[in-house]
Image 1 (cartoon, rainbow, N blue to C red):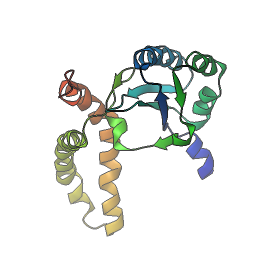
Image 2 (image 1 turned 90 degrees about the vertical axis):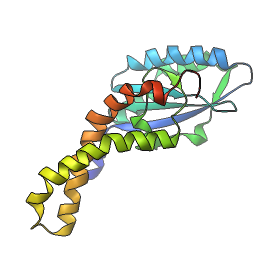
Image 3 (image 1 turned 135 degrees about the vertical axis):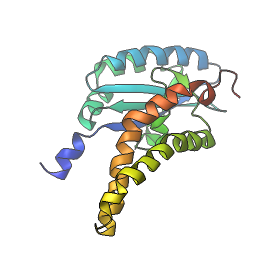
Image 4 (image 1 turned 180 degrees about the horizontal axis):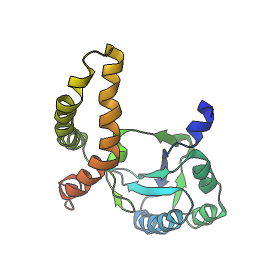
Amino acid sequence: MSTTESRRDEPVTTVLTWQVRPGREERFEEWTHGITRCARQFPGNEGVSWLTPEDGHRYHAVLRWSDRHRLAAWLESEERAHWHRRIEDIATEVSSERQSTTGMETWFSLPGTTVQAPPRWKMVLTTFLGAYPFTLLIQWLVTPHTTGWPLPLRAAVFPLVLLPVLTYLVMPRLSRLLRLWLYPRDGG
């Protein structure tokens, strides 16, 4: 399998930006619930999260899909086009700001909800809380068995073990456990 083929099969996260007309925010947020439900039914969907603006009228949709091909199928689908026609007088997608990401922010999402991203200091502290115990565990259990290995290989073991554990096991659970602190209802 070529590198290009394997990349097509990798999960992808894409951020879409919407410019909402002033005074139409409530209708737009109602619309987000409907299009999110529709997207969840589409093959390959792994979640949609909405980030509300701190100030201004730009909303961001974080789309997670099993691969680029299925994401493209959703983006070009009649179902999505139908939902877009419903808000032509409310908001406009800013296509120039469409971007794919694999950043840490995707660890901190509440699928199907409209929330602001947590402050970066909270993301850093939460990541530390998740990573530190596993860093100790890796240092204790794995590092002693790799002392004879070349430095680049020894250095590769740590992220190869830690990152999948954080991404698939620790951070989703930790962000759910700390959701009231990460996403306070009163904005504080």
